[in-house]
Image (tube, rainbow over all chains, first blue to last red; front, side, top):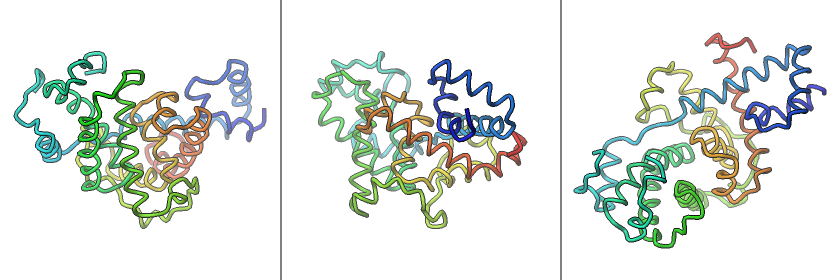
Length: 80
Length: 194
């Protein structure tokens, strides 16, 4: 497997969605290719950053206006 | 709370308590999607209200074949597309061209952040937001749904009415583009020399 071939399969590889024999080829390639090791590592870290820190919260005033629009502001759920 | 704990029968009968549970559960995710796609808190609030207003009107037609979050994301994404179409041509929206001037794009960093985000370096968070905003809409929505909101490839394909192959292809391109933009910041964090 060449570097360019590996690049095209990296997302599936990191997601664990790549066929086993292709995973083995990538792992074998990485053992001898420091550049691709770095690529896999940094791509994985990029994905982790967005998965862990990508979400924002709804501001309280936005949430209150949403309830008002939906006429739900006087209702309480078990959690609230 | 998950869909499994939502009372779909009560929702279909527009029970106010059940609907409030639905709103409490999914409003943060819908708002987040709209904010990342439009980059404007005011517009994101409009999409949020429009999504749940539409969902309330149409809830009796929700058949339960898809996850209700998938249904809500689809409503929200269609509302986002409608907004974008008002601003530019459909051809631009569907373009996969990433050649966007980052200086003209809004950042999302001034919005209220989740606790985890506050712990991150402000500069990195800003760079993550900028990198995401710098993607075309077609790539950005795939990252938002798949990597940030945590939908599966199949669910993402369902929301976007794409094949799973197309979702994977766009996601791969998007991730590589994000990685390239964040590279200097990953260095600073000593995560790995690039």
